[in-house]
Length: 364
Image 1: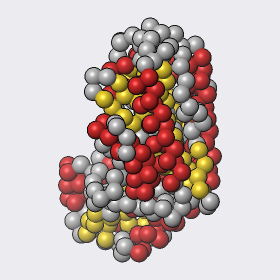
Image 2: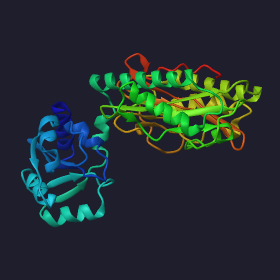
Image 3: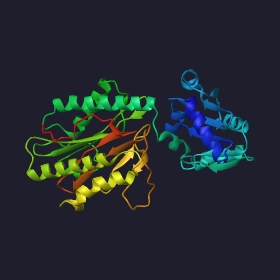
């Protein structure tokens, strides 16, 4: 954590910031706070200055803050919290960075009222740019969470029976991940069977999963704050040739995208390689409309994003330590859908697969 704080301080100096607030009360994202401090509780504030950092939390977390937080002065903020926050900010200079895209207007107004002498400078994305490259500790956790989640999926598939509902399948997978030692689901699970497979974000329902259908499961676990992300599509009994054709096309599309992922390549090239396979087929009308991939870490969707070429969105060059999903799909409304997804860790000479489930066609 100390090294991460030093990297943030160096970035702040480059941008002329004397201090920066990372706020994570109950209703805001805690990913950046956890990344910088190690704190896993539900409410805290971090003030980083050029010569140090102060972590503030409430009395519920007095012991936990002392145990978890590294590289910072740890203090309780009392009520109202803003007085202690302002005191920590005044230890630095007057040019104060904050995450403008995350901080509610009411909170910002409280800060301005308490610190009228300070210049508040939007500093969105500073911490996220530090998080984009995973260190060895982060990579090790992500390998573990993906492995355990994959093993949980195999446990559930081994006992799958037609007639099981989408909701029951999701519940069993969630339970299996916890039985394997994960802290819970990494995000809201997606299960779409038969015609519901055309919904990229299908919520599990009470619909029975019937013979002849494709079933798509998009799931992940969480461990020490880090998440896995994987999508697996399988058949139930004998499926018609058209559905097998769709599956094999998505599989070829994913393989092309994965093969394109390496250091020095722009993220959009991964999307292009994957998308071209589907667009050259008879199924281009139902080709995935989203960018083919995204980073994974403390958040389930984070930089880098593999956007469609020509959209004007940021198009980062892949470097070692980045994570990236490759998840093409074909979605035919009222008929079926198929998506396959793996998460990669970019390495010096290519990539490593974090997710472990083979993506060859299987029927249960």
